[in-house]
Image 1: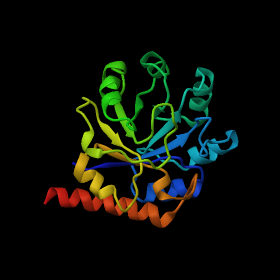
Image 2: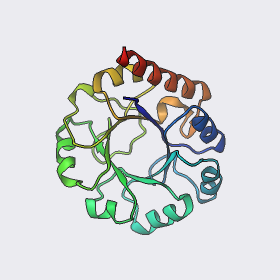
Image 3: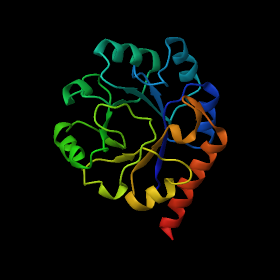
Image 4: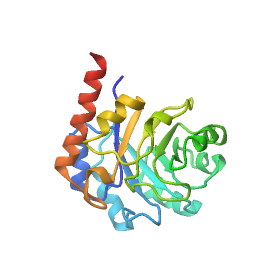
Length: 211
């Protein structure tokens, strides 16, 4: 099975174009207030214009008011939503789009087991290495061997980079891998060489798994 790839925290049209050229499956755009990758209102349209059909556009939130979520949906026209905060299942599903719920794995797998019960409407769970209440995109790893069965596709995040994503895939066999800081030269500024290397390493791990 092919491992899907999501590049998150994109802020520049050129980075979006390169991600698409590299065959990335999903593009993540951040609206969380605490993130250094948060988009300004005047950035959204230029980014959306270069995101083509058949590539998922994901809008990321962390305890944003519902009015901000609605405004972001109107501006970005995403195909999926991603929630990083304490939003409950009813809030997450209330916008009429499929959603990914992020689970903080910094204190072990117990929260992931709880999330399976608390978010029955989630289309997938994204497991990140930060602690509860902290924003993602911090490059923090967790023990990939501790992922419990969740009954939904698992997106693996947290400290992934070209040098370790192959090991992560071999250990956890996730549905998808999600990277932000691991392909950057600065927060929100992607590094083209690292982007290419990351995709190459994912594809290499998939080929090796099939042999």
